[in-house]
Image: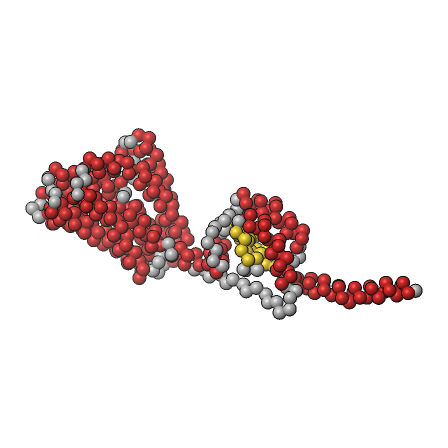
Length: 385
C-alpha cells in the first residue's frame, strides 16, 4: 500500500512539474518558432549538400520548432531581400547558399551552415524559455535596396566605361592615322601641343554634347513607364548581341590578325571620310582651328562605333536621376579623352608612330574582350536598376 502511494505521489509530481515545462516549451515554440531564411542559387552544388546533409538532421531534431523561408536568388524580389539583409547585417561575402536565423544569426556558405546551424537552433529554442524573451525584430524589405546597392558602383562603372570607350579600336585606329599624318606634316613641339589640346578639347565637347542630347531624350521617356520598359528590354538585348560580337571579334582577330575579320568597326565609307577630314584639317593654316575642326567632325563620325558603349552607359546614368547624370556625363567624357591626352603627351616626348601602331594591333584582342565583358556588366545594371 505504501509502495502504491509512493508511485502515485511520483506520478502526480511528474505531471504537475515536468509536463507543464514540456507543454510550455511546446506552446512557446508553436507560437514563436525559430525563423530560418534560406537563400540559395538554384542548381548549385552547395545547395544539394545542404539539402542532403543538413536538412534531414534539422528536420529530425527540430521538427515543429522552426519555420523555413526558401528564397531562390534567381528571382528579382529575392535579390532585393538578400541585398536588404546584407545591408542590415553587414554581410560582405557572397556564397551560393546562406541561412539567417531569427533575422540576426548569419551562416554564409555550406561549411558555416553545417558547423553552426543545429547548435544555433538549440540556443534560439533555449532563449525562448527565458523570462522576458522578445520575438526577433523582422527585417523590413525595401524595394529600392538593390538599386541603392548598385548605385554605389555607378561612378566607377561610368569611369571604366568611358576609359574603355576611349580605348575602343575604332577610336584608336583613327588616332594612329592622325598621328601618322602629323608626323608626315612634321607637326611637333609647340605645334603638336596646340593641335593636341584643341583636338582633345573639341572631342570632349562634341561627345559631351551628343551625350547631353541623348540624356535629355531618355529623361523625356522617363515619364512613360511602358516606353522606359521597352528601352530597357531593347538595350539588354542589344548589349547581349554586342558582347557576343565583341568576343567573336577578339577570337577571329587573334586567329587571323586580319582587321577585316572584326565586325564591330567603322564602315569603310566613314573611315575614308574621317581620313579626308584629318588631311584637310592639317592643311589649315591655324593648327588650333584645324584641331578643333578635326576633333568635332571625327568625334561625331566615330560615334557610329563608339556609341556602342556610350548609349548603354547613358541609360544607366539616366536611372541615377538627372541631377547625378550630368556629373556622370562629364566624368565619362573626361575618361573618354584620357587615352587621347596620354597619346599626345607621349608623342610630344618622342613616341614614334610605328610604336603606336604596333601597340594598337596588340590592343585589339584585349580591348574587345574588355568591351564584351563590360557590355554584359551594363546589361545586368540596366536590368537591376
